[in-house]
Length: 423
Ligand code: NIG
Ligand code: FE
Image (cartoon, rainbow, N blue to C red; front, top):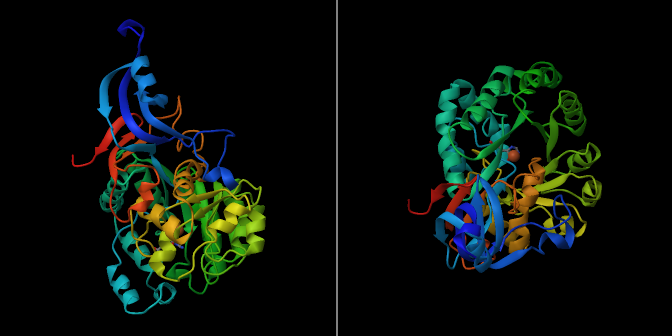
């Protein structure tokens, strides 16, 4: 083809060994056998222009079709969509390494939490901090996540636990949108724990969440999440809070059946929540209740690993039941202190017994659906935003094969190179 008839591209990434596009009909999250049956283009290239994917296909074809301002030789590497982290608590003040040491010496996560540490210790730090200080402390976490391949991230409030402090957290999340390239999706989580001043007044706190916090949060948060767990919020309390959130226009999520099966997953299914998250203790009834409801099971193996309970969500049973599964980091100051979705991919394979391809699909296409970004993020195809990770790995399977090493070579967000290895 002569230069005149070639189409223009901004960037052409060539000679990739594989591209896992995550594309393929039908629209929606992948489930059952389709989760691991990925479209992999071999000896492939990606053309990017105007912030979007112009084409994905064999290098030879795209070289003939496009004249690009920048050609990136990615010989021997692979590409996937940017990783989508659908469950984090990345915005907070302070640090809990002292509790980490206590846990190493034998205290359990729940013992520490019920004696005023845990979530409440981060609440004390976050209430004291100005919004600017929360932003300053949180920005490096997001920058590290980006360097590990995350290009879209959900972040929850929930370390304020009063109307002003929850609003401050949501304002911090919003401000972080201007400081770094990861697309942020915000979730209000006033029902993350019972604050100290309401210790003897659960009902009063639920009224506070419904009457004071939700009306303030509704314009700042897209989702509302509740920690439905024995000793935290019951299924009835969760239902009441989520009903108010839904009336305010928020979409729903539940921290469900993490430690005990209290019926959280069943509630998520019956409310047609966007996601039911954790699910370490989900039983057969819960699995059944999630089938065909459009609710995504967001699995967080990093938390099971980090808390050390030795029990993991039954990923295989969920996949076999046809429930769409996603993976998230749960990155937070206590129960899973990480910014790396790559570690999560490895744990998903090693502990949830997901195949590498299943894990990758769960951390891209399906994770995007868990936060209602399925039409934009998580798939590499023409017309979508060009959120791309180029990996220094010989195959897509090799990404989770390596543990605790950053294999990211380049990250593109909306067609802009936002991170390069060694740069
Ligand atoms: O998802 N489960 C509840 N909330 C967080 C823990 C946050 C913390 O310990 O600060 C979680 O694991
Ligand atoms: Fe969480």
